Length: 81
Image 1 (cartoon, rainbow, N blue to C red):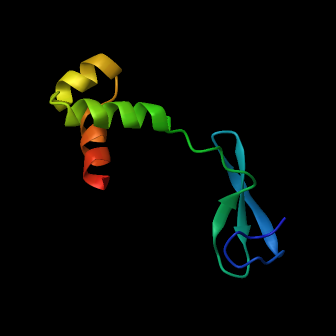
Image 2 (tube, helix red, strand yellow; image 1 turned 90 degrees about the vertical axis):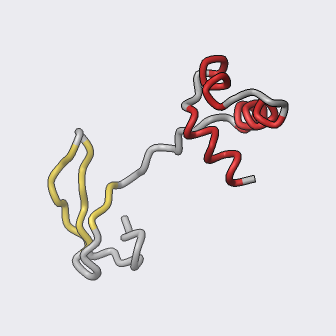
């Protein structure tokens, strides 16, 4: 196992949190776990549909009620475009 920051193999176990083993790099001091869970986000199709609904005149809260996506999330998607 290697440190994700400095790629050093000099690491120690550093307790557990939520059932996952924590490790500490002796070289750079970074704490990390062995494997990180995959990113959980909305599918690109959902994002595209929400933005299209906004462009066609629906309000953010209306889209929230229809799609089940929080209105501030939709606002952030619109700002990104």
